[in-house]
Length: 94
Image (cartoon, rainbow, N blue to C red; front, top):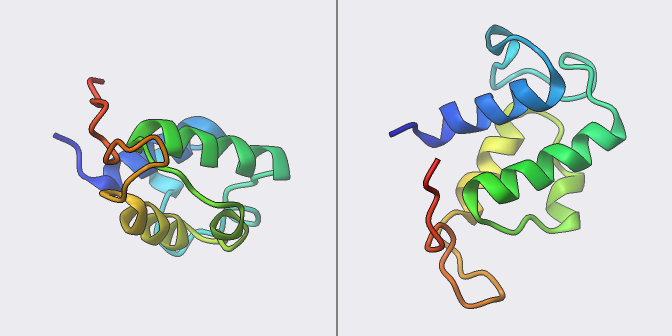
């Protein structure tokens, strides 16, 4: 099974249309990976779907680097979602 870092990298690479080699923890979403504000919203939505988590607007606003994204996803995995399901409990069958 893929670990969190691999899954985050895969989502970012697909969303920003960049090779996975460019996805490093130090890479900035805007300057290094060329993300627009719409890309940033879409990657947050993709990460929420991939990990069955909720990322608040406040958390999303603080995502500047891949390391920030990893920390945010890691912090949110395992928390209870508002619908009462534990993140990931709905089954991530991909």
